[in-house]
Length: 196
Length: 390
Image 1 (tube, one colour):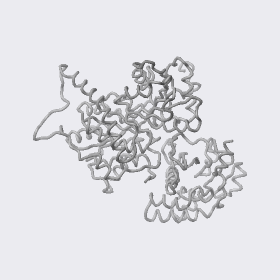
Image 2 (image 1 turned 120 degrees about the horizontal axis):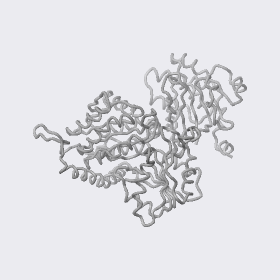
Image 3 (image 1 turned 60 degrees about the horizontal axis):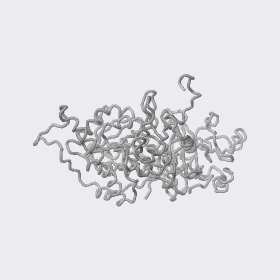
């Protein structure tokens, strides 16, 4: 089972991101589970959502405490206490940022990949909603699920111009991260090594 | 085919498949998405019903009662303070023996204010005379909603389908949404033989003198006890159609010959089940999911507990000044066994506190004590309290 935690701010589509990622798993006959950790439900407040992906039905419903990956929709959250807590050794952090991945990785002492998702969303959607671009980047980095699964999940949730632009956005976002760089991080060997 | 759906969205679709003619609701977290999704289905022309937005939960329950009494299949949903505001009407609905189905998106009760999950709300109305069924996952909540209409219409008793707020309502997972034809074959067109009819006026729920009240209450109690057969039958019959059933009144998971059992209600069973396979305990353990809390399945419980040494009852609510709610009923039911197991009673996950898998060894440690300790909130952090409150 692979566990992912998504951090963002109210209004950035944090829950939708989690739902889309889990929904994409079903497109390739895998199982997904996604749920938010609601706090104060207001725009701008830090919010967290959890995703699990597995090859069999997922029974547990506890919060994800030691994710293999973090997706962070607002760079400033990198510095908020608790956000990086529990990340598995060698786990990856995908951050919505226009800074360089190398710079952020050195600064935070973690394996960080930066993707200017808000910028891309503003350019293609006309709105600063970074969630779908980050998901596309995440799938390109990890190949956890094919990009096609994300497109299909989007097709079930959106329609018309919003869908078209999001499909365009994820295609472009997927090319802005080093493909397959985190491919090895979710293989069985990694899990065994991490839990040993 | 599995569809990725949020729990609330799946429930809205299940309700629509049951074709209630009237839905009446007032939004409250974490129930809101259920009625929001129902109103979308109605607005999109996918669900033909009279959707009545009201100004309070008292009215939501009253409209549903009126609709049901007039002979319509009806539905409502609420949670927490909403359930409490409905309380008077809930007793009336049950006392008039009106078929009705509602969803309780289980949430803690104020004060202090909490929007998060526990089961204090439905437990607060456990004696209102409704059937109460608690669901472990969203697929079960979908299937139980459909079963609930069958049970309700056969027993002429209202059914509250309880699903954990957020933990289920706001979780997206894979749901097999039944086909309309399957539901139609299971739920025939509704006909309520005591429906109010202006051509043949009757009064219901009116003043009953002491000469008759005890008989009304006794027969209501008997009707609930008899409903156990209908709950089992609905689960089996629906299982024959869709291939999924849930054990009727209760479900056991794990080694049937285990010496120790953990009993609980709702979605925590999934986490406990995962914990059992991730961190298998040295002693053999089984889980008991109490699906029907009202009626309380005392005999079915005795059957699965007869050979146990210990049973640990994990509550998702608390009776302040007493302790456990479910635990006391389990204790009473098992007392007539020749060798009743020790009953250990605790609560966890109140007001949305996360229940991690590590709770499993903590629960099992309760059974190390030969003499059960007093009821405890097992995940309380006493250091946070002043000395005198610990």
